[in-house]
Length: 230
Image 1: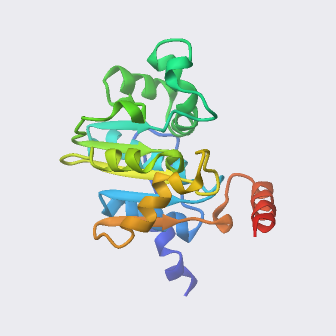
Image 2 (image 1 turned 90 degrees about the vertical axis):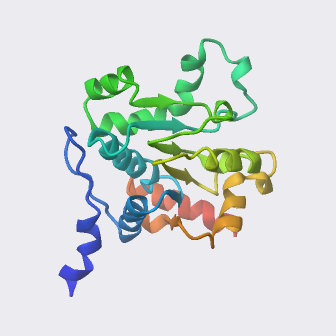
Image 3 (image 1 turned 180 degrees about the vertical axis):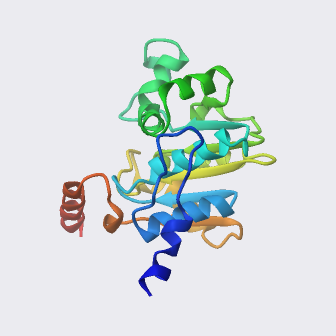
């Protein structure tokens, strides 16, 4: 019946301690993604813009850290986009990478008070880490979000996945229609989907235009571009 059909949506509600309120999945695919995060150490969430993949990852990560399930939230993205690299950008490391991580901070600021974010930063419960700087590290008791993963190389994706240490979890989000690399085939996300889809212990969630919740107009725009590329 209808009530039973709605059970997955109810079970996937995210309650963040001291947050602005509960976060409800709006589609069954979103609910499946949240449940995947709660039951698997490494989760891939792939979908177009506006489907909530980054927002839901950040919401669940904040819930885990603020409820003391994990020690720290680590946010990372491939930093090289549109031909720029960190070495050619002005300012210190934080100033250089903040523009790339702004969407992740936007999500956090929509979920918890700004003072909570500042306190987490002061207590080192939030870390921003350029993907290129993670080589050689072992991330223990953390929840790590790799956003815009479609712009990782195959080597970067392998490096990232092998950083996940004891008691940690990784959430990989990306949009395979927005690859900025010189060659689409170089995408570490596409390669991981092909190579790892049958590996036990990993979870893959796929969102589509039916899951677009940002703005109804966005869904129409994505569909128009999709139809042109076919």
